[in-house]
Length: 341
Ligand code: CP3
Image (tube, rainbow, N blue to C red; front, side):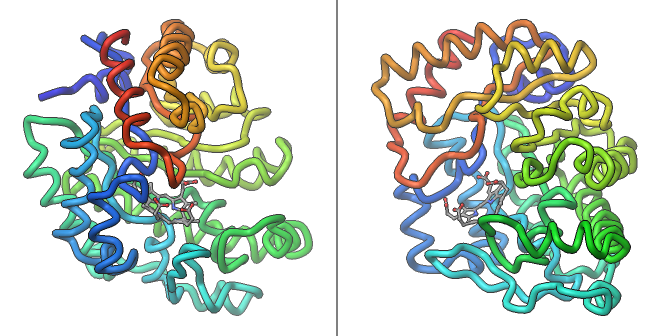
């Protein structure tokens, strides 16, 4: 079993620096696209055997040191009462977003044993069996703020005006929404660990839309609650936020074993701020993968050198793989990490 990923998460010695990528299963892989064109995105997510197949693709094709279950953060809250649609250009969206206190009151916090998300747990079981003795499997969910954002905006947003208006003008409703999402997310992640996920990650992709004071008052407590509740699963917990730069020192105590660093920060400086208590993940700019093999190798070496100062370093992008990324670029990055890490 290649357990470099789990060791790096825990700050234990590793034989080589492990690497995986957010969106390692996705549009850049012809093998993924062949299935995507036939089935469509949501059907892929909801068919456990297919979700398992594309989860394993990048392990076979690219040689990454961890698999991440193929799913989407937006599927999580469907059992709360959100209707989910997918548009090839816009991505996932909720046609009936949350806009008032009554909408939040109507949201259900389902029991994980009957939450309609068994396709995720089944996909995890299939992957865990097929990957046994190979690489670990990561489970994930959107962080409460990321989910609140999608649920209130209805889709990806440019300025998050509806969400931020609710946060400030009707804070009681916002907090009730965050509370319900947190309860459900914790149940969902716990069920993923029970099904065989060997690490659990929260994606907080819109953490940067509010300032540090509001981040620490209105978002961080829900992240801490989630990670505190999940300590007894015994698996490494990972926080993958984007733009939460000013709150890094606070994030070092949020209960996560690993903090992801986005490409907007220097990895060395982030490690100094975080201290010895956590491992780091990151943070190559995803557009470096559009460069030549030599250029990619140079940038990988520089990131590896910075990562040495950390308790543990999981090599990753400072965001996800972009559509159109050359497969050879992704492979060059993984090869360089394995050659020099
Ligand atoms: O990392 C992996 O390989 C696992 C799969 C995964 C997907 N989505 C599959 C996906 C993960 C971890 C996610 C998380 C996710 N989904 C986030 C948080 C992380 C981030 O990227 O910031 C968010 C915000 C979403 C919501 C989402 N899903 C959007 C806005 C879109 C459409 C636009 C876009 O960015 O592609 C998706 C589509 C999506 N999710 C695809 C895949 C493979 C489509 C195909 C692709 O772009 O590769």
